[in-house]
Image (tube, rainbow, N blue to C red; front, top):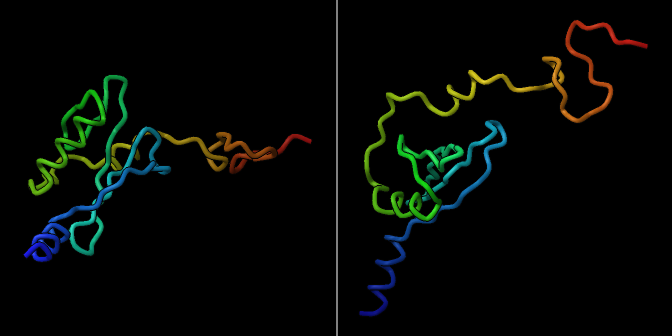
Length: 114
């Protein structure tokens, strides 16, 4: 009987982890795996806390508690994703004249000074 409870607990366990979103500065990724498919959700970092699923959280512990309680809640996809919001923020790159830390980068169409 104890084995059946353990197997059931294993089936109900949800693995999740946090990662850094390199494509969007100031954004983290919460990845969870319920069965075999990973699911990714973005978390915004703000001066007053974290934004997740259109809600603000003062600390990461409250965000995790909310996630664990509301993991099955349907997501509202009508709001702009973090990708579309981040697309509005210009990122600096050598192609646009910004600096990526590499020396000698020249903006597209610019004439290098010799």
